[in-house]
Length: 307
Image 1: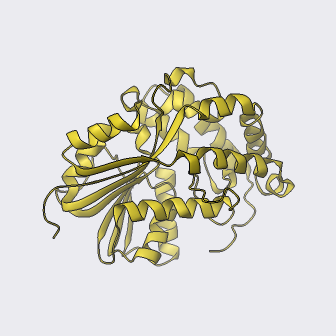
Image 2 (image 1 turned 135 degrees about the vertical axis):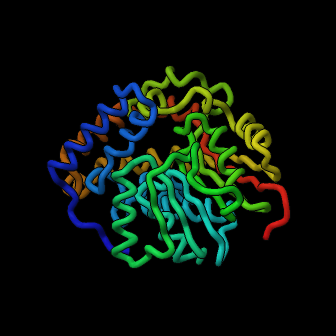
Image 3 (image 1 turned 90 degrees about the vertical axis):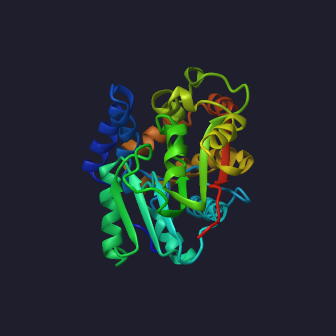
């Protein structure tokens, strides 16, 4: 990996504002969720060496944002048991960083990605072209709840922190089951409320606006219900475990450190910097909201002998 260049441009700020307004005001669900992610460009990310923008998995709490993102991608790959020669479907792939990492580290035969953001699809395709990976990494515009693939064609289906947006997530579970081969695995890193976490409308922190605007009510349930929905979809060997202790609090600490770092303010746009400052201005409110959120790692297997 190499450090990304200085990432400030008026066009990036325009995209940020447009996506923000779309995510809050659009009446169409897909358009609203797309707005949440279309607002992000490399000029509006916490990362320095990548384009991840997930919560991350923090083993010490002191690692860099990029390293925590890589650790989360690695954890998901382990849960899915991605192996050399296998075929993987990555749903909601962001800018595709995890696919490139898995290809290098895990050596699958091919990785296919679906995403509803044309902006992110184009960015991932461009990187695949630049890195000469177009024969192994394929990115396309499609919905995870209506997958454009035949039955039984993947060894693994993975989803890194996007399933909370699917309408509903249970439909994605059924689609994942359909496209998996017998013995295939599903693995998901996802955000759900803790038991008794309260309604989405009760969240007040600006940093969590997306919970109110872009999470379907049918997805707003705890990890026990989550496991039950995987079973209803036909999966077996279902595991849904919380990793919130290595997610939310160190993620917040990293944001606070980063926002206060003068070098970060010089690297990103003034608009984005000011938005992050506002999002973390009331830490008590933000911590109160985060105390009601879980972060889970789920895995499940489609019954039948692996081929």
